[in-house]
Length: 395
Image (cartoon, rainbow, N blue to C red; front, top):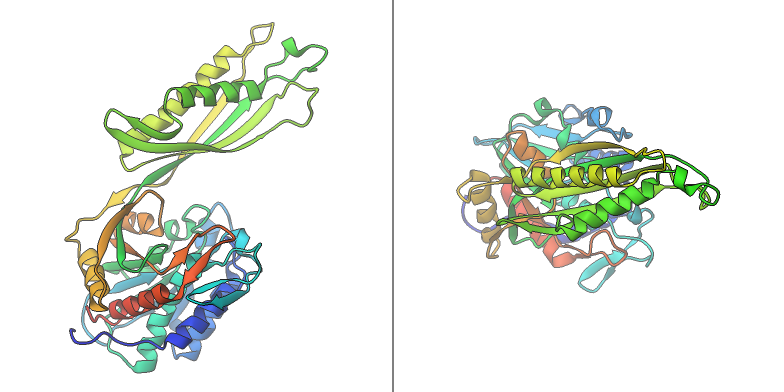
């Protein structure tokens, strides 16, 4: 430990991330990405027996063509096992990406396509770290390399990982969005809300009074939530959270009073108790709206309301070994480290829940999930250097 930080082959790291971003691999379709990473590992000398895919896809509600990719390696020096991870799925907008270098950035050549730096850049930080260790024959502690699937649609890979495959790591490091000098040590929790409104159909011109409009019920409920401060940014009694109605499906014709509507929403807060208050406010608003909309027979809609915890919030102490080690790695390459708590969910949420304190580090992605996405090359290379320091146990 100590001394100058280990160097990386910058040209190889840039080629690697460009190649990996060009491979299709939206959530549930990560098979080609797994194959590409596996080929790189085998070419570098990683034994076939050390490379495994688990069955997370069989437990995920999304299914999918492959499980998580996990590589477990013994150490050449003593120390607690370290986990390095980054998800390999991208959003559908990135399908067909052709990465091209433009000055300090890598962008998609097609202006209608996202880049996929989220999170192929992170996946390449992890891959570059082990490739450099093997090429340079560097000493290292026991390592687990973990490339989760299906992060973009619910953190399913991290949630349903086969924990026995990970080898009980004590320190965890995850790469995702943001600058390389920032360590994310906590993140919010999230409930998904599935609402089904079952009203009564009738002819909208002949006998609208005989129907119960599911759209009317939903409109009243959403208006009630907005009017009373439970939709969007929520600040109540010193507590803070957010909510959003994101998806609504209803109706087939304008001459029919709409009998059914399905709606998907979310409720987020770092405070688990307050998050449940948001969920309760949503339930109350929809039940109240259903009572207000009745037909001439006094009939009302029926509400099905199903909240599901997507991931729980967490915050790690600044003295947590994963945190102090991550900061030391950042500072070892000449950067000043800073800490942040995220208002979005991360694979680290589930790793923390599994008992593996995991810090999330950035690797230079910008404007993710848009056609303007780019990868800042210098930041990505710094992330690779930080990854190598951590993988080699240099800090």
